[in-house]
Structures are given as C-alpha cells and as structure tokens.
Length: 437
Ligand code: S3P
Image (cartoon, rainbow, N blue to C red; front, side, top):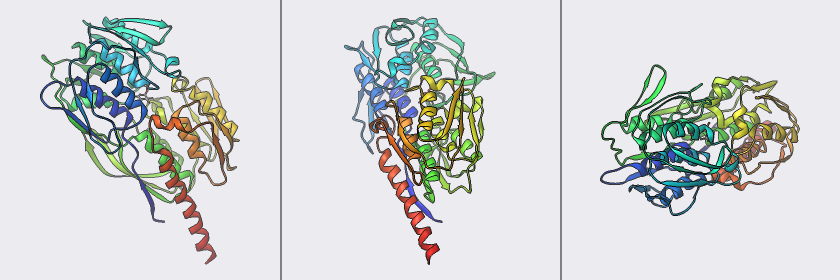
C-alpha cells in the first residue's frame, strides 16, 4: 500500500472570520495580511459586512494574500446581509455592541430561522440596545456604545456566543468573564493571546481584561487548513477504500479534532505528522491509513462541541460500521444551517440505513448494503458533502438534491473528492490485477 494522494483542504472558516474581524479592528501603522484564508461564501459575507462598516479588504481569492486596512467603523448606509453565515451574524453583533451607532443585520432564509437570543440576551445585559423584528431571530438592529462588564455562563457550549461576548468586551473596552458547559472551539481566545490582548483563564473561567489603552496591532497570519473540511476527506479515504491519503496543513486544535478521536475509536487509523505552531494554532499533516474494520461507538455529550460540525460525516461513517453508533445530546444540530438532526436521520433512512433521532440523541446502525437513494441537502453545505462522501462507497448510488451549497465552506470540494474516489477505483483495480496475476 502506498500514499495514493495528497490533498490540502481550504483555509479554516472559523479562523478566517476572526482574522478578518480583528484585522478590521486593528489600529496603527501598516496593514494586516492573511494567507490561506478560506475563499468560501461565509467568509466573503464577513468581508462584505466589514467593508460596509468602513474597512478596506482586498479581494478574497484562492492562493492570494488578503490585505486589511482598518479604519474607524462608520454607520452603515444599508442593511448588513450576513448571507448563510451564523458566525458572521453572531460575531458582528458582538463587534457592533461596542460601537455607538445603529446597524441592521439580516441573512438568508436559513440564517433568519436561527436563534439569536443566545447572543442578544447577554449583549443587552451589557447595555446594547437591540430591536428584534421577529422573535429570537434576524432581521434585527443593534445600537451599541457604552457597555458594562459581564460575568456570564453560556447556556450552550457555543464558540459563536463566547466570541461575540469577547469581541463586545474588546470593542466596548470592558471586562468579560465567561464559563461554558463544555469547552467549545477556542480560536478567538488563541488570537487574543497571540496579539497580547489581555486574555487569560482564571478558576476555570475565560477572562478578558482590557489593557489601557488597548491597541490592536495590525498582524500577519497564515491560516491553517480547516479541520472540519479535512474530516470529509479523511472519511472519504476510508469509505472509498482509497489506500493511504495525506491531508496537509490541517489545524489540529484539540477543540476541533474530536472527529479524529471518534474515528480512531471506530477503527480508523490517522497519524499526525510534522506537528507545528502557526499563529498560536497547532497544525499537522494527517496520514490516513486503511482501517482493518469499522465498529460503532458512543459519542458522549462532552465530546460534541469538539466535533459539532462533524456529526453529519461521522453519522455517514457510522452507517458503514459494524453495530450501532449513538451521538448523545446533539439537539444543537436542529438549529444549524438546517435541522441537521432530522435530516441526517431521514437521509440515512432514504438510502437504506437504519437511523433515528430520539429526543436529543441520534442512533445509526451500520450496514454492508450499498447506499442507494435520493438525499435532501436543504442547501446545507455539510449535509451535501457528507452524503457525497457516502456516494463514494463501492456500489453506491446516492443522488443529492443540489451540490452548489458546498461553496459556503469548501468551493473545491467535488474536485478533491473525485481525486480520492478515483484513487479508490485504482486501488481496487490494482488489487484485482494483482490477484489475477
Ligand atoms: C463556529 C462555531 C460553531 C460551529 C460553526 C462555526 C465558530 O457554532 O458550528 O460552524 O466559528 O465560532 P456554535 O458556536 O453555534 O456551536
């Protein structure tokens, strides 16, 4: 068996949003410069909103350096459209809470269905004036300004909520003390620490204390490849029986790599090579080796925040494993880009797999029969990619309702998937050739 292929997933979506936002808030001589930034639609939504507020951001193109010239934010002339991006909406609410003007935000049909009170409640407690047009959702308007400090325990483990509040502390220059039920992704904290912005942990809480005066220096960052996008490729290598696959420059921040822990527990073999640091984030090359077999597992509530975006693809892998896999406490999946919990279960059943969502748990029973049937993606990028990966199983016939939604987080997904699927075909043909000799 030899390394059949090498792929580099696109830049990390979460880090790309944060780099642009904090870059647009920087002051002082020079500009911020980012390489490896994700070119997906969600990141472009953040860039568009920041430009409407006065930031100068060069075009976001594959392989290019993105240059951000900050200038003081000014009241936007029009509605801030966050597109499909929950991260844009929630993080920008935090940023706007520290600015003394009114701005109105909205999003596409999916984003307008997603809960916003988890962010607006604590921002109101800090003193932001927020007017909702509909209950708990976009569109809404915010007028920030003078804020009070906040000590808060988030009801859900959500990096978007945590980051919105830290950004409100940063822009409003007030202290923030946060606790969460389980640790969610910590990219905002790492970036604050990397830039010397007064963040530390105390008695199990995340504490931001503004320095006086706070100066955010322009900074340079090389964005690692997105662990969540890498998860689809790792799973494809396993399900398409593609031989060894190297997935390069992947962010392996432990708050993001729960999928690797679970895949390994199921029998997959993934080595982390060349571990290094990139702007305060750990990065490695992943070497995926063919498993000898896959078995079901139980994924506990504490693990969920470390793999919250990977439940669709892990459920797909579970459908090819021996026995049952249970994901505990995944109710949050109901309020992602789609009702992922119901759609994962329903789509698995549509291709012949036993799967059910009961309460907040998801159960999947593995099968050896090839998956066949039509899948509804509901324009959710992660559902489209997860079920496209299921389509690489030998003998599969999985038909997606659409494919264009992958541009939200992984514009080149189908080209990379094809490379892996073709590797699988060659591997099988090579194997047959050898047996026939
Ligand atoms: C994100 C946090 C997660 C994740 C989303 C990106 C972020 O959402 O699902 O894709 O960049 O902070 P929650 O904070 O709602 O869990």
